[in-house]
Length: 230
Image (cartoon, rainbow, N blue to C red; front, side, top):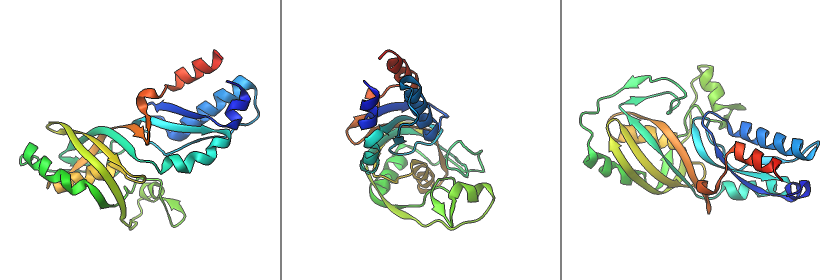
């Protein structure tokens, strides 16, 4: 592959590691391409943010293919992960510490399966206060970290499928296929409330975006090694 190939446009499938931001992945890949080909600049962008505490499929577009980013972002996504029930956090995941605990004695497999259908199809969802959505010119997480109270409007998202793959108290493993803009952290929070308890997201992995699958993605290290072997 040549520098011109990257400029004309490539779609790169990267398996994002835990604790990396999507922006850090883009920066690392861009730096590697620039270094290898001695380029002053090359466009690289990602098609859909993954939170630092999530792993999995990140689509990167280079050069002229950065124009395709919106097209990829709009595609259906699939995630697997774990809800931990009995406790909530302000961020709805492990970025913040537990703020409330709830009873779980009444929760069993039957109740969980009764609640699942409420989350399939078109649903109204409030994004987490710890998210990158802008309100009044600031990201929601900036309002949250400043201790400001803000009203968040709910919005319609679509969950195409929702399967419980394992239940062992206090953890519920799941697989979800959903539309763009769906916050799995919010699903976790709302699922806990629907169980008359609380829950937060303790593990998340993106496995698919459209027809692209994480099993066909490469690690950052593998990309750089393969690039240097060209």
